[in-house]
Image 1: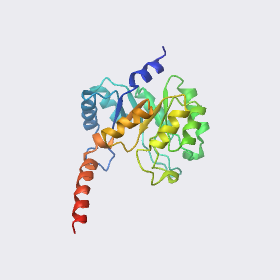
Image 2: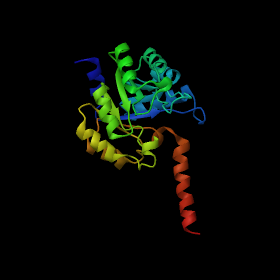
Image 3: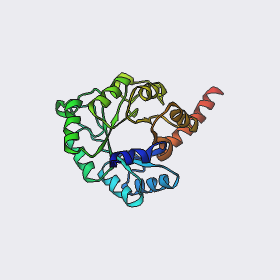
Image 4: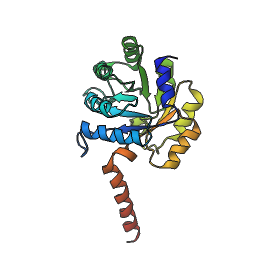
Amino acid sequence: MTHKQEILDQIKGGLIVSCQALEDEPLHSSFIMSRMAAAAEEGGAVAIRANGPEDITEIQKTVSLPIIGLWKKDYDDSDIYITPTMDEIDALARANVDIIATDATDRVRPKGQTLLSFIGDIKAKYPDMIFMADCSTFQEGLKAQKLGFDMVSTTLSGYTKETAGKILPDFDLLEMLVSSLDIPVVAEGGIWEVDQLQTAFEIGCHCAVIGSAITRPREITKRFTDSIKEISNENR
């Protein structure tokens, strides 16, 4: 069995917890993310999805789980921000992550690079790395498999111009991908409830990722406080 297959088997049927906090969030800290990851491991997570080499390095000190690495970077000439270029791929590879996630939408990458060119470059340089395609549509998922990605995720549904306003979780997209692809399909995006997670596995996802509902207390708190406001408005 190859190392790639060992990792894919290890995460199959399990929950991956995304431990990320951007610069404008109160919990932005590599140390805090490492403790989040430790708590997720104790809770039964099968892997951690993490942003940037600094957070990943700290997280690796506290957990023994596989790491799905990405690096969110903004470029002036592209809307793509999840691991947009080879620079981010190189840094994540140096950080010894097990899987690298990158935007696999149809949008043009920085410096006008196409997805076809990008996946060719990264697979040639890192043939033993598992590459996850973060997609927003069914056609993108099909294309990702054809281009040689090892797994496809529904991560970006609702976050591109073409999918803006989509109700999440996007179970329709998940079902189409699961029924059409031969590579593992990951359910990610908008999972807040236990029954939603169960539905994703009933559809047949390989594994699922939850971030905000577990590791972003500002958003969790806001969800509850917004519900109070709804009641107050209804009673006026």
